[in-house]
Each structure stands twice: as C-alpha cells, then as structure tokens.
Amino acid sequence: MRKLRTTRTALVGIMASAAIALPLAGSAAAETRLLPHYTGSFLECQTLGNQAAQRGELTGFSCVQEGHYVVMYPW
Image 1 (tube, one colour):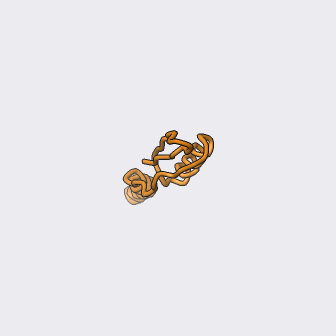
Image 2 (cartoon, helix red, strand yellow):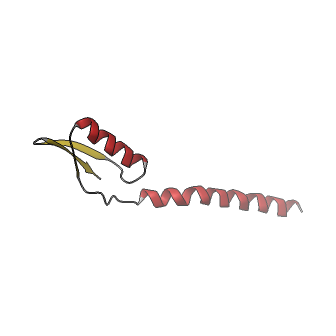
C-alpha cells in the first residue's frame, strides 16, 4: 500500500511538471509574423510594441525615426 501511494504521488508530480513545462516550451519557439508599423511618435511606437509583447506576439522591438514617422520593427 505504501509503495502505491509513493508511486501515485510521484506520478502527480510528473504530470504537474509537464503541464507547466509544455506551454512554456511552445511559447519559446514562437516567432513573430508582425510587419513594421509606422507610427506618429516614439510614445505611440513604444505603446504599440509593449502591448504586442504583453499579448505574446513578439519577443522584442525597436523604434526608429524615419522621416516624419517612427517605425516599430518587431522581432
């Protein structure tokens, strides 16, 4: 009886670890499909990039002044 309880406890621990690890592994391999976005200011560019990052759509971005626009380049 004791061995069955130990085995059951170990199995529950393994299943819980897998439930946490699998979604994390899937998100680490994600790549962005976003195109550069033209915005009117650095604040708008930062806001757009931060919101996309919080939704998990990108891992990083940079805001670059190009003429009258600020372009958000995601990666």
